[in-house]
Image (cartoon, rainbow, N blue to C red; front, side):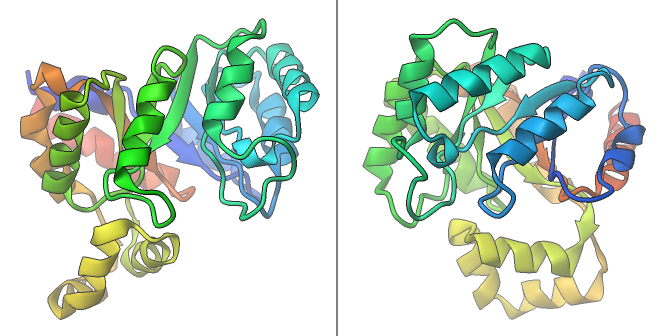
Length: 274
């Protein structure tokens, strides 16, 4: 059996809480992992309310708690209480995209430290990682932050990346530095190519975005074929799946709410592997 098979059978689907997105979840089955994003525009409470609304649908829900939107320790306690009431046992704690924090927390590490001292129901706590670096933080500091979160975070999720050899190299370096936290590899789902291309440039997907801007052939590929599928990324990643040292635990799919297309693609991939 291919090392990809169990990962494709247990994908982690990221969705954005926007108008009408709930009905798009109908293609998923009970137990499927669903991450609910948290944006500066909508705010953290929208994520919490969305999770409460979806809590009876049988999915394994993971709300994103952007650290810079958590005001203080009491606010964190209130969030924990609301998620406990919703039956949530998994959270994802990124730093968040706000230039200035809304309160006392300026990083996910600070939130995790206070969370570690509280009673909470979370058996899974995810943090963000950046294979291609971060525009405002040095690579050494990024590695140090991941090392500091070991023991509190149960897993990390990589930022969307189009360069699998670079991602595997980053992962190997992380393991060389003694960071053993399991990783979920962030991949784009199936969607309109130009939408994905523009989104990638907007969110600054490191070297992948820079490479794409320089390659006329790649841009032409986006224009010629209307639908993007992450087949080539999966193929490039497959050899690393069998390396136990790298600690790849799963595939995290950025669906941009195109969930049905991605589910169909995953089923096609599984049929091919079988």
